[in-house]
Length: 632
Image 1 (cartoon, rainbow, N blue to C red):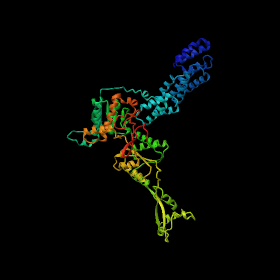
Image 2: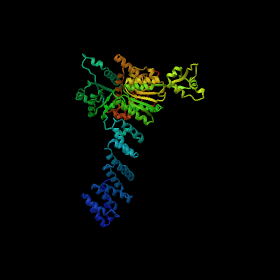
Image 3: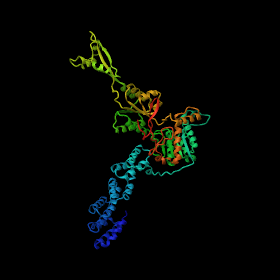
Image 4: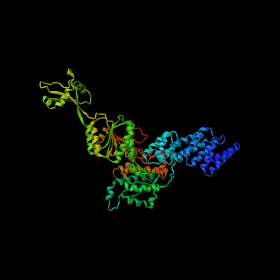
């Protein structure tokens, strides 16, 4: 609302104002227009009690004080107008300036309160919402979040926060907070996003495969032979590209060798054909990844890493994606699964002493503790500590029983009551044990005596059972954030020896360990986060398996399947939504068109589909695949 509106109203009223007050008011207005605010304040002050000019003079008195730098005086005057003249038809202007001046001075909570009062008085958000956007949007996300929490009823604040969180695709906490806002305020994410990225569709998409092929020449094939992972990945990509072409989706794969070198990678970015790419797959190593990510961000070319789960490589590049879920996303999904499926809250969480495993363990701990779980042991373990822990899990002691109790326990399945005979000589050299037994004998109650006299030498039979120091079934689950063969072997073996209900949660990397057989994994009811999971009983799996076998004449590998999967995904997304396929994330939801468990990004830059698997009848079975799945 502009001051000219008030000027017009004032002019229309001049005919009824007294001549004296009128002259003073016009003079005060002249001083105000000429920027003589000190003099204007004095002139308006003398009119503040005028029955005709009072509210107008008070308003300009406040505005003159504000222009003079006296914020508190200005706001006091405007507040008095609201008290003295609650029905004044220009109070929306007063509230506007109260809100504006509060925001401008950094009193954001006060500014929001006045803006909400302004919206109520004006019966519209047309004045209040632009104010909130003007002053709140430039603030840091954390501060906007705090303000929104203080004013949960303010829809404008909630939408500003959602837009800010939506723009920050690389922050896992931001994504979680955004999901909360979407549920609470029922935002339409697709319209909220209103991406500024253009829709660019082509007949053919050029996909740069930026990998360490390490190829010198046919005369020296040794580096290539050693680099089978990369070659198998590319083979899977080639097969998928051929199949996509048969469906009318043209993906041209252009291989570029980084040779694991930053300098070589930097040279690639200077190539004109490289600068015209529509998508980059790779790189795999940190040095080249840093160079290519900077190029991707500057040129606004999407890049997707096919193998890594390290969220750090995304940096602040919103054009960079992980085809797999990040370690953080996996840990949170594992915690969510534990919340839904494990009833005993007593838990142990261990991790290897490195930043990746310690971070994921800490996030896991935080999430399940919020759900009511009790973490009785949380720490990193070196080789010595792993052995000590495994020993403590299987450590046992003898628990003694009276004869009558022992006779009853022997009738129960699974109980193993043993006996030991003590001679008189044993009593002499095991006096402490003997004394402890004698302490349990009630006086004058022979039936409760925990031993029986066998003969004239008074040899004694003692009834006992070996019991774990940590009682059986007292541990709900153990989560290990580690890729250490030794840690997994030691702790899993200890749990197997306990033969109780303790569950173990971990990562699919363990399946590469040649320690346990599949039936042992199944018997222990282990569950893993396993992004590479392929339900290999599906017809689609068999088709791709046969195609890879017939094309490359060898048993297909995990990386061939992975290359096939990522190319199928990006090919279909490019075909549907164009070069900036992230424009279709909200429409696509969960993509399940490939071999594995699919892909889902929405507000994130790492895949949110997190398969959790276990063995059942010696075959891997998914017990969780994404956020909408029903956990067992």
